[in-house]
Length: 338
Image (cartoon, rainbow, N blue to C red; front, side, top):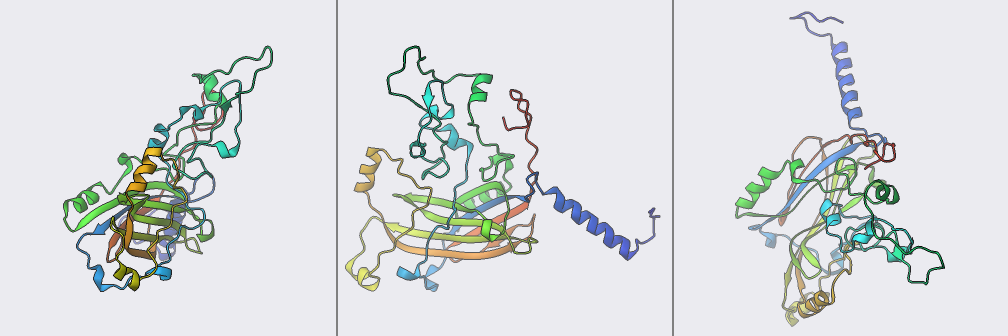
């Protein structure tokens, strides 16, 4: 249909064009796996001058803090580049698979931060006559074909922390940091497919100063669809804690007989050296106050959202993302990640 200058488009035609545009926009965010992906960026900050005394905060049994089932941390390139044992990257000849319980701490299903499955170990049993000795790591096409290990792909893998070049909150975080009224606790950006509540993945959050095994800020953020899948929701289940190296006084214990306890994140691991364990035994921190934040916010794509709270604030932005197709593997000839 040709539209002459100065003529108004019929209402039904305008409606059709709008519907076509909406269909195009929605389909552009659907990945090849059929899921709708989004890029999420979040900053959580503390109100340094917040008047938390005006609120009545839950304590004891009323303080319901927990990590939902399926909670995970974001992966990152840095975690993979700081592995303690690089032999996990590739099985070598003459090595046998190891049991699941021998996997590197941090591998999927194993408590701890990021590692990868320990694919192989060198056998300690005597070799049969004529059997070749184990060979160390090799390089080149053969090594690539023999190993399932690869670094995270920030463009195609879900739940991978994005580099600073993909951040939009740089100026916002700088403004917060330059103000004496606020203190940035954590800043994260990642991409993921968004599901309904039953299949959504909670992301473990930590930030602020560290006290023993815990941080000031802990909890989870969950990005999910509403039931009709027409709106993205953010579920915040965070808590800001205050600590002291002094044990609670008798008067405080009489007022609140149950000491404040914080849950341990599912990914927290015992990858601690003997020296670290000794240090933790010498320095014990006690939780003196906990300020929980539980909220659920419906969000529009490409808009800046602010969740307020007496102790902390949350800035979040989501927008549709379409993962690019996997590049062709030059060694196998298939469209697999390199």
